[in-house]
Length: 182
Image (spheres, rainbow, N blue to C red):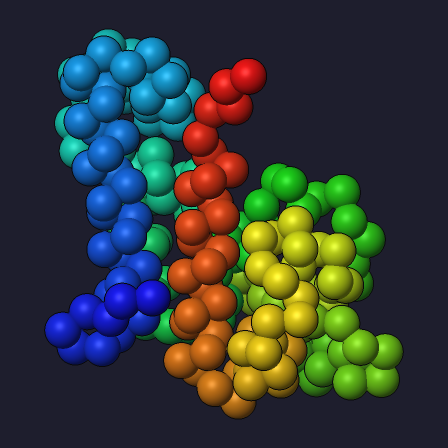
């Protein structure tokens, strides 16, 4: 993964999403039907007849990545607050998996420590998930960065490793948002 001039993976993620939005906007303006469908589906103002603008594409990319809007993407990755990851770590494609939810970090950490798994966050809650969930999230469960963070997204031993995993998840969200063409 390339680093930005300040070396920040968070800035890389934001730039990645900006680039995805730029490409989506350009395709929509050029009349690409899949891009127009994505914009209409995920940006209500475009569906109501507003001409597609870059801000609409940014909102669509944010929603496809599990955020309510573009501001939430920037806030999440610039602030680095684990609770702000929300649906980024719990996309629709992962809803089918069994996982254990907790209101308190300490309880989640104890269960993860005793039984294995991966501790993720969702707003102010905590989830312990298995390898299948991590695979569906788009990350190899045996990726060494999981061990570097202690398989704990909320309180990682290595924040840079968590940010790198977030980049991998971001790219998977955008891949999953692309139309399937047979």
